[in-house]
Length: 188
Image (cartoon, rainbow, N blue to C red; front, side, top):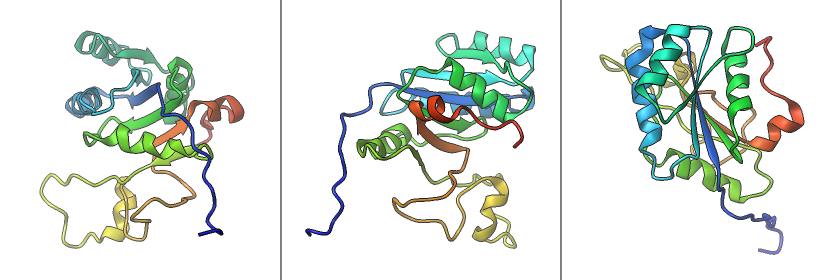
């Protein structure tokens, strides 16, 4: 088709950093599952960074349990934006991906995310987040409300598409984006 837009291609991504932010011991088993899901990816990340938000006991526990993971404190104001920015400061990846501490990545998560970066115009990419209900989805809770629990909701694109906002539990950016615009705003 002569009207089809030509997509500039680039080489594959060599360095991927994954940042997981944590703040409480109450989610320790969730954090273990999150880190282990990243460690078992079909496309291994260059770095796994766990940022601990102003909780020295949790930071020490992460360092002891995961000696091959980079565990760093949040050096900014308390909260998710400061923690993410502290992780970005420790990251050296061409792609910086974020996974929540209570999320588990599918085995091909990084492989699927980074495939989007073959288009040199792609600055960010994300994917679906499915809720894991402890006792099944409540019958009164429609899929349109999944956004309330930070998950993909009915009405979002079901295939690759431009979106206004990525869901933070599963998002990635070119590392150069942060050099250009800075980090996450602490006002959020």
